[in-house]
Length: 271
Image (cartoon, rainbow, N blue to C red; front, side, top):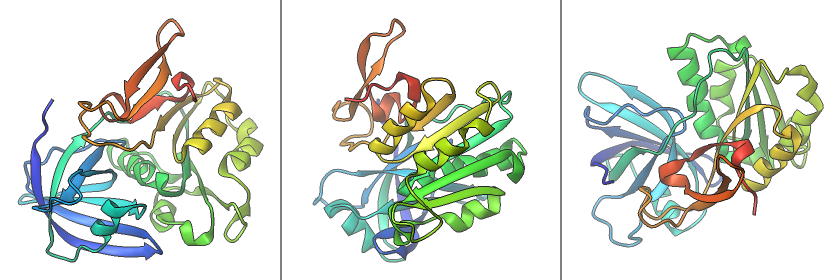
């Protein structure tokens, strides 16, 4: 299914840490308001190399009468994102979106836990903002676990600190916060959270989510945003397919871009 392409203007493209950038793009007021967990496909307007757009999670969204704006938090990992990192204020980009599904909100769950690894903080931060604004939640209702490899890879913490009172920060090398993997730190705290009253939202590297699946053992409601390379963002190329359980427990493949990127963690089959 085709999606409208919007021409946006870069109003900010700031390097927060080495290879970690925050881009703000101004868009026409006709851009549909996104939901937490959705993403956009972005490319430089008129540039033919590289041809493919890049998928980036939406970090925040705002709207005024004459325009709207999205923020994109991204890491330079290849040629496409390296080109994006070189954009200056006033540059034009092509934006397709919002794409994909969103996190489902369960008003019956009293404890909301976020578990983010590295750049996975982006969609979870937007979800926390959304819950505070739309559902009127306060910072004491949400707990945030943020992990990164080193202190230099920690981004977005300042925004989370304005939204959540309970934050646990850890790095693999102990250079900031506790030393250890975020899933290991959470495992030590898991008894604090009743499965019946808790919903967990997570985003991060595949190895982190696979570890979280082992820690939770299917006992907790947990939704995860999967990170996969995408070529089209619309499900046409089937290049981002992942294995999940069907209703009978068998294995089927679903497209991260069109059927996700948010899935129930208990349904994901790790291959």
